[in-house]
Length: 333
Image (cartoon, rainbow, N blue to C red; front, side, top):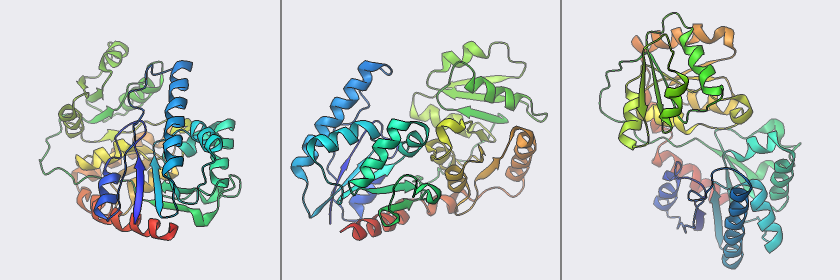
């Protein structure tokens, strides 16, 4: 079996390449988009389009009936344009869907591009669950839609001694989003201290100068500091907005499991499945009224029954995912 893989944007899902290789699947790598600058604006969009067109040109040259092309971390519209321009068929192409479906839900042109990729015969590989309720509206064929658990690396063996009640970890979103999450935590009666971990930590410091609660700031740019931020917390609150994460898995949730820290998440379908299967590693709250109650219950469970992080990770590790991926590729051939 031969499968070609493509890296786009970042390396948070790099384990999938190793998993495919260990299953006897040959991966061929292509240049990603991590180096695309600036980070915003029309110039960035232009450069992303050029990257996709170059990729599609190479993809067209190496397409064959014997090889499956496994593509991850792409943008809907540039890939659709490249497929149309170079006449690429999709019957041997497997697209790993991460942010792409959420974008298609939110934006009309992204929806058009997403549907067009399906009409070209592409297979879609979703994290956690296939969006059954949307199959008809998006023109998706159930036989070409597959799902795998979001990968989790083996949990660390170091015993942590958390100093902070809760943590907010991830890019600090200035202008209200992250500040709202911090105020949610601050309003809980049992909240004694909060840790904020971000690669843009100075922005967080600027917005939290007047916090009435003790706050610790950790710059998570370095991997060791990133892990230290998780292990310093009794729980981590993943404060994702519904507009961006209603139908999307979380890489930070997997990082929390690897560091043996329970998570508090909004009750979105994909993330809920990711948090709760095969055993729960946290809790989900449905609205702001239940937030404090669920958070308090999570802290109690952490200190009494605990969570089976090893069992959760085992079902999402390399050995388990190897079986899922091999089955999907065999179905495509």
